[in-house]
Length: 76
Image 1 (cartoon, one colour):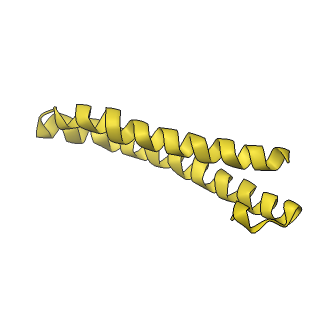
Image 2: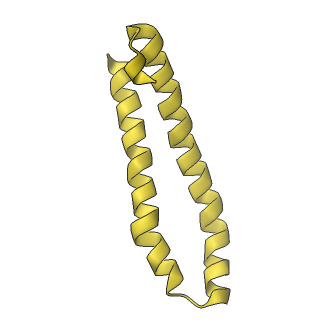
C-alpha cells in the first residue's frame, strides 16, 4: 500500500506545483514589460518543464505499479 501513497503524494505535488505556477508565478510575470517577461520566462519554463514532467512521470509510474500490485483499476 506504500506505493499507492507514493502515487497520491506525487500526483498531489504535481497539482500543487501547477496551481502555484498558474496562480502565483504567471500573474507576476504578466506585470513585467515584454523584454523582461521573455528574459525571465525562458529559464523558468525549462526548469518548470523538468519539475512538472518528473512529478507526472513518477505519479504515472507509481499509479501503474499500484494497479499491478493491488489489481485495482482505480489507480489508473
